[in-house]
Image (cartoon, rainbow, N blue to C red):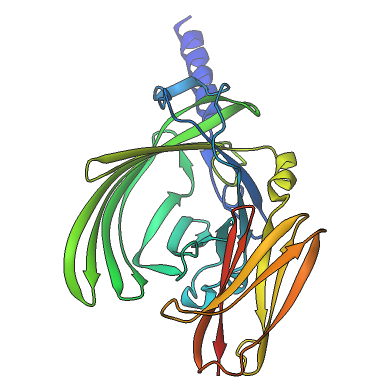
Length: 343
């Protein structure tokens, strides 16, 4: 009888081990061509829920807030600062305004830096000590720690980052979202302590410390988290952001009335440049060209009445040699930025 009991116990334990989800390569690594639409939601009253095995998290009554965001995984060759990140093999493009450069392989997902183009002058951030976002394979109870450093530059301002993080797979179970129920989900807990040292014209100004806690829920085959909750405490000022990944059918709707895929040619140029982009119905588009110090040198307003590929020619023969930026703003609230060189 004792032997039978031990056998049954062993089988039961084995079944528990099988039920625990494991994140691994390549099924959980973003790849070029992947598209994820994310919906931001109200965080009021939300908590991350318990840790441990066989947990059920019910977020089925989430309230949508901002417009959906669109994350497209592209090649570094198609990104604005691809040449600055030679080790990157993917870029996660968020609404054509935030580009995250990363490397994925069988050992994990690593962040190399980013470029934010929502301002008049793009802000480039590069890790000198790269950040480990996720290790492979990764299952319930696994954990790792990491340190990372980097520098962001914008005109005469430099921000030097020094940080540490810890990542733990602290729970697994069933996740209920507005777009469905997901079983065999693994939750990761990431805590970061980031110290930003701010310099202007090479002179130290101040430091700022951010404590960040992130929870991500992953399915065994998801390229990104099904649901995310982030709490940031920046020098006593707290902010919480939550979003979930929507069903694929919503991705097309998120693009309607928007703009995408900005390109400029020839580049370098000396007489003219052609600005190309995708536009969607009933869009009013403002195109501006600025120099490296943010001075406006040309501007033009375009109207798109049908979905099409816009081609607009700009004469630049009177511009001094240097680097220039094309900023495109749509009345839908979306902005695109790309750069070109006048020789």
